[in-house]
Image (cartoon, rainbow, N blue to C red; front, side, top):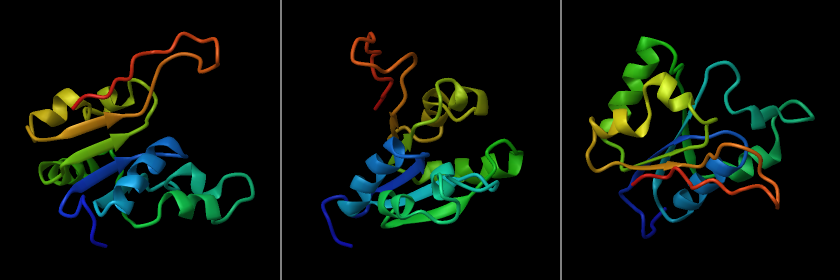
Length: 140
């Protein structure tokens, strides 16, 4: 697909809706989006509620490539870090602290790729209309 983001490579570490939706918009604009999923079933949204494939999952993940990697193993992490070297953007919506624990947080990945834009769609604490809104931890 041609678009204004043609030639841009995005690595998505997203589950459910917010991460996949953000990366879907980038794919819609022509970016090459590679969704990284765990080998134990992938994005939990694949089988949400009814079991089996879900149309909602496919709607939020249209236009993407997908690869399964276990980021908790040295082999999976090595493959991921190889992809990071050629990436332009990382989109992730893991729980706070997960990327740091895996060694794939912004500070770690920036050492491999100085041009990397890192978008973290997470925020600690409750998310209600009266909750104190945390600052986004998006770094770019």
